[in-house]
Image 1: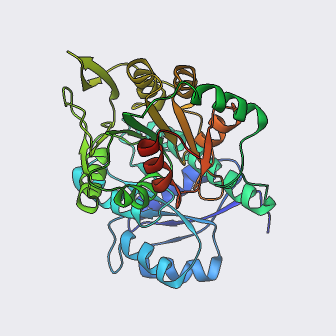
Image 2: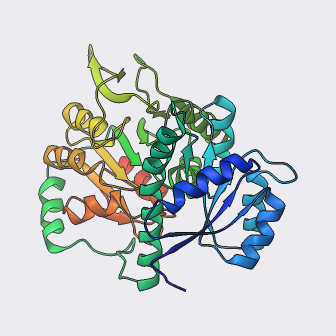
Length: 364
């Protein structure tokens, strides 16, 4: 079996859509479609028989739906990635949020092009980076590269940088988080472990489209002692609250008569991201200086690195998730390799690290 080729099973109850998704996948380099399935029950049998690396999974199917497939795979301890095919509706967002918390790798939206050709182009543009990100993760895991662990000491250059800013650092007043692929499951693990009297507000960018961030915020709010909101323009930033940037908009923090408030704007995407981690982080650096803690967690690409440069210059503390616990080690790697990380932490350790940072003022 060629490790450079991704073996994919297409699961959808619509014959038309199975063919459409198959054609798009076959147009992506290094992808082999090994089969299709018309519902979840058949999919589980074909997964056992065909051994695909990844499945594209419709959410609504007869006999066994997409969530049922994910639950069954987890119960059987079958290690296979899934990309959900989702509708841009409130119900689609809710179900997709549940799928991501169950461990789905990522999702794409059903394209609404004006022609089959346009829809093909749209879905290919959405699927390709996710496919290649997963291929990269397979390659990384197979080569078993040396991973910075949560206890690993920073390089000498990072130590010197950290020591220079620690002398200026004061008690943090805010935590800001940037996260993407693998984010909902990671947040589902991280945020419920923080106490309701967490002494700082948390401002968070999760790369997601409109409707999906609202569903994510609602799900997390049910699980957390913290109050979790999809942020709205003009909200006052308060301790014990988490503010998630709304999909399709940019979020920044501003001072209104010395009171920190949320501003939601329609400013342009940055690095093709809207919301953008860089956009949020710059505003935090501007208004909080050395009294902020930033965490960059699992995700594709490098959104957050430029923002971390502003935060580092201002004296903020920066924590990045370790390679081993990331679904995709892209965003944290970019920050780490830029020499901006003060500490590396596993996802398991992240709640304690953040709590220690805001209560003690420095990571040990």
